[in-house]
Length: 226
Image (cartoon, rainbow, N blue to C red):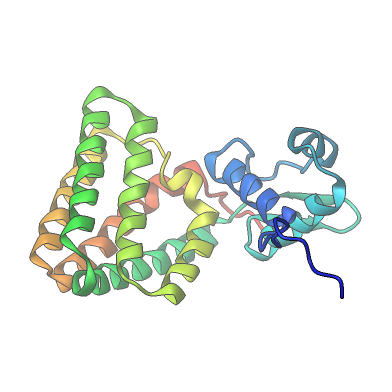
């Protein structure tokens, strides 16, 4: 009887999933802009892969709303209309509010301390005028609160929707007054987390996201776009 040789464990992760992750990061970081056509030849060379896993990855990102499939013309990075943008931001605001409420029931002191560390790093970046560092820690804080909610359904829906506007949400240029307002709201988040006040944190997160509407719309939305 033949035995299966050891050392050849089955990978549970397919190549096209890894390709989808890399393309998702390119889109959300802004390296691939809205409406930009997907150059399959360029990407296969860049990733060192064949077209098959790339096309499977494209299908995955299309189901997430990050790419648009064009009949007989490949695919392009999805754009979003101003009306859609309003709807998506409102839903994300609701999801983050729910996450804040749930997180206060289950979050540990160690998790709050980690959020505090990111908050301090974000403040240092803000003071230094380091936009990249500021937004990186900003994103980690929001994702940490979502993770602390311990609700996979909520997290999956949030990840799918926020991915569509993430590039501009965490990189949108703001006025000095808007920067200061955002920092003040983040400081309040820490206070409510330590107090385990889910109602207050949920309400704050909802308004915090709503305050970003105008900034995100100016950087990402396309007035009247289909």
